[in-house]
Image 1 (cartoon, rainbow, N blue to C red):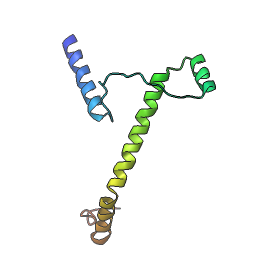
Image 2: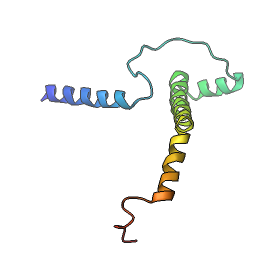
Image 3: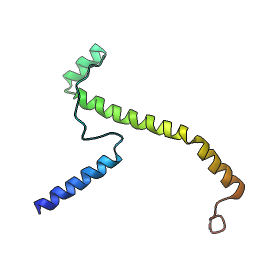
Amino acid sequence: MAKTARTGSSTLQTARQSHAPYDLSAAKRPTNVSINADLLAKAKDLGVNLSQTLEDGLKVRVSEERRRRWLEENKSAFAACNEHFEKYGLWSDGFRMF
């Protein structure tokens, strides 16, 4: 039974990895950042994990930026689809009951 639990956990981790916007298994790397001194002091007083907070914020920002760029790169395709549907309608138009 423990073997199944490990396999399930591994499967879940693989699923998470495949949907992540970056390599979850990559090593952590130390870096220097500049932060407002008062904000840093308050965060430390409150026990805020700075590394995790930065990583969480970067995950969101990277996902947002990738989405924005994807939408921009595919803007003409969306316009072409919309133009096609406006001109010819949807295949299901005759079947809708609303």
